Amino acid sequence: MIKTFYYKCLEFFVLFVVLPISFVVGTSPIVKTVTGLVGFLYVVYVLLVVEKEKFRLAKNLKWILFWRDTLLKFSVIVALTTIFVNVTDKESLFNVVLNKPKLWVFILFVYSLLSVYPQEIIFRTFFFKRYARFFRDKRLLILVNAVLFSLAHLFYGNNFVLLITFLGGLLFAWTYVETKSTIMVSIEHAIYGCWLFTVGMGEILGFPT
Image (cartoon, rainbow, N blue to C red):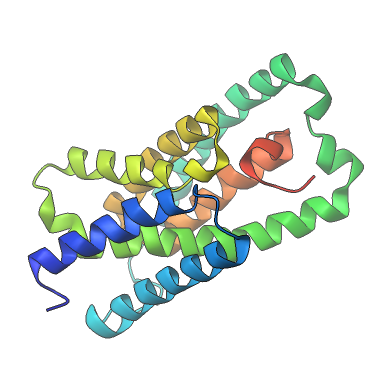
């Protein structure tokens, strides 16, 4: 039953629509944490037990091409975000890395390990494994994935965050479609996210400063 079309449709709606919206409702942080953890454990269970997904480094990954494309996109992001922070909130520009270097290193480590990788398991590995066949057009698949990734950040209550995460979702979805690699898209996600914290945009994205 868990592999049937109708079950997947219900699963899709609950995990990627109902759950994110529920985080906006005024329930206690404990309830939200437990709900999110249960959802993540379900995702891992389905991947490992139902879909027989193997979390191992795939062979023949095109690392040179990946780094070339990622660093090119990163250079554009660096330029745009540096200008943005310098114009809108100059005091925040590189504030944390300059004044709280230990906190900066700690947050980068925790974020990359405990936030980025689980997000990519859910929104890329799980999502594409379970629902890619629902979409004949690859562009529509990537668009829907980006919209849902943005929706998952609805609890921030910030339209600018929704825009950033939508654009990020487009990049990450495209990378996953091209590489089929959770580790590659996680690296890319971590690089961009860590940079946003470094340049001074951490506060709007939930990084403690």
